[in-house]
Image (cartoon, rainbow over all chains, first blue to last red; front, side, top):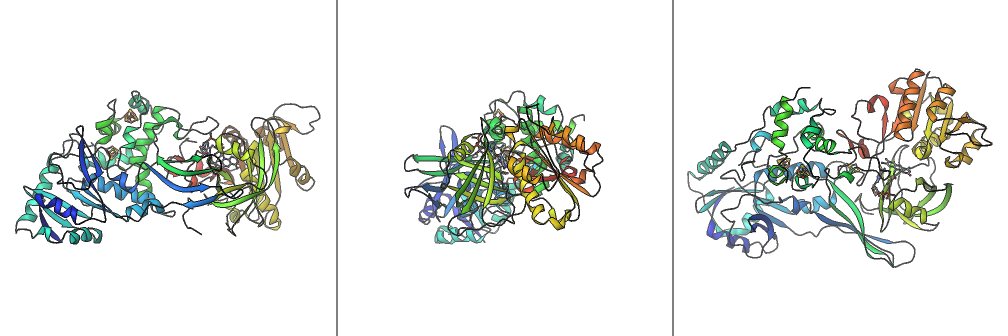
Amino acid sequence: MEKTLKKDAFAEWLKKLPSYDVYVPVEDDGRFNYEIVGNAGAIDESFTNAVVGPKKVVFPQREVLLRFNSTNEKAPEVEEVLPEEKPAVVFGVRPCDARAVTLTDKVFGGDFADPYYWRRRNNTTLIGLVCTEPPSANCFCTSVGGSPAGKDGLDVVLTSLGDRYYVETLTTRGEKVVSDGGKVFGEPAADDKKAAEKVGTEAAAKVERQVEGVNDLTENLRDMFDSPFWDEESLSCIRCGICTYLCPTCHCFDINDEVLVPVPLTGERVRTWDNCQFPDFTMHSSGHNPRPNRASRLRQRILHKFRYFVENFGDYQCTGCGRCIIYCPVGIDIVDVLDKTAAYER
Amino acid sequence: MSDNTYIPKLAEIIDINEEVGGARAVKTFKTVFLNGDRFSFLPGQCAMLSVFGKGESMISISSSPLVEDYLQFSIMKMGRVTSALHEMETGAVIGVRGPYGNNFPMDEWKGKNLIFISGGIGIAPVWCVFQTALGNRGDYGDITFVYGARTSADLVYREEMEKLAKELPVHLSIDVEEPGWAEFVGFVPQNVTDKKPSPKDAIAVTCGPPIMIKFVIEALKELGFEDEQIYTTVENKMKCGIGKCGRCNIGGHYVCNDGPVYSWAELKKLPQEY
Ligand SMILES: Cc1cc2nc3c(=O)[nH]c(=O)nc-3n(C[C@H](O)[C@H](O)[C@H](O)COP(=O)(O)OP(=O)(O)OC[C@H]3O[C@@H](n4cnc5c(N)ncnc54)[C@H](O)[C@@H]3O)c2cc1C
Ligand code: SF4
Ligand code: SF4
Ligand code: FES
């Protein structure tokens, strides 16, 4: 289903979605993030991409799994705490980040489908925004199977055409938010579809970074487990974990109990994002650590994304959003690292 | 009952046996589910135990599935959760979720001789397989147990072992000489070499500290065992138990789902990341 939306009617559309948590990219101190806003007027024309992707809506940084209390002497009571059945809609999702959600879907699906994730995921509508320009000089989506106009994972796609958006609805979830908008939408003109396609193609041509030899990557990485390469590449890492926290495909988490009242015991079991770049991520209580240094942790990050995930789920676990390059405080650059593996003498 | 795997079932501790004292104490707990919950598992599988307010730990189920009255866990005191378990008394209630992981392929072993080799707390996963084999005695050939610890005071299940020694070959060892110790003195792999179990129609199951496993495997290979005849378990730090929290992997294998049981033929293909 195709429609158009005048940009100055955007706020009208949001008003028609009162039952949703509406997330819109909001600028603060030069950086964007998806925030719940009551009355957003528009998607800021200077929006590039958010520091934290829509991953935070389907898989929040901290969430309560259960509550326990032992007011009754003996057996504690355990209460499952599932997220509220509240629909959310995220506007301005970049195609790389929507595709990343399809990858976290794979992890949280399977034999032990994760009820917390799926409660949120099934209530979340992702409204994409085609990149008119690559949001950053470090984007490389086209190397890893994506594109600035990619549709994987999106429910609705908006393409900016001057003062209007071209609106494509892809799923039933998408149809719901578009039909809720009712008369705010117009009908597309004859050549709007073509014009919208052109936006995507032109943006794709402007994606500057490419991973060399990307087709051989998984094969190249097969023999590199014991290579000194990882020592060389990881020397400057300060184990801050930014690369992995901000990665839209990274899903690792920790589970801990937080005590609210010690007696009678009341508390919550909480899951929080965790990070393979932290030394204690894998450290046993005995002190033994199977990934005891930066080299083994960088190796884990790269091999997980470009080899293990391919083996387990048939896809790279990277959508080329560029965040790990942009925000790494010491300039470790995943595209450079991958390029070097292609050329590395084994 | 919820089908949410993160929600533990409540279980009461009905019996506690102090196996080993000291800083790395070991206690064996028997638990029964409250609220009529049940749980069926296979030898080698584990459960995630909760002490509410402290957290969760992955622990091998050391009783056999043939025992229906309780689940048994033998637990070494390490950090937050296991220390809290060691503080508990009978009647206390813990959480149990699972079972998780794969199992020893005991069906494939029918008709074979079984040799169990373990060290220290490594006996926990082995004990379940051993008890299951004893329970189905007719299905297997000879059963041999080789078990060792640092000192005689560190031997877990010592009483049971001594009873069993009347029926089957049980070869105990301690690392250094002690007055009154009549059995083998030396490391577990040396005891294996000393007792020379035959590889003919045999399966060896070995669990213990990684360094012990390494040398036991070398000793078994010396004796002519093939990689396919040797089984072990792998331990890595775990949180979810279901392949999602991302920390227990060896290469692309998630030990919580794809392990913890591996034949040496499988394990030696994986990178050394455990
Ligand atoms: C498959 C498997 C089976 C196991 N079976 C047994 C057993 O039968 N008996 C026994 O005594 N121990 C067993 N362990 C080890 C046991 O899980 C850890 O000793 C225990 O989790 C330490 O927790 P803690 O809270 O006391 O220590 P802390 O140091 O406070 O650890 C904090 C948390 O980190 C995780 N963690 C830390 N070390 C480990 C580890 N080595 N393995 C798994 N998770 C860890 C746990 O979630 C733990 O709660 C097993 C481990 C695995 C992976
Ligand atoms: S690995 Fe880096 S570039 Fe790839 S999706 Fe994650 S943050 Fe983006
Ligand atoms: S962002 Fe850079 S410095 Fe920080 S953990 Fe990742 S690679 Fe290391
Ligand atoms: S324990 Fe979470 S992935 Fe294995």
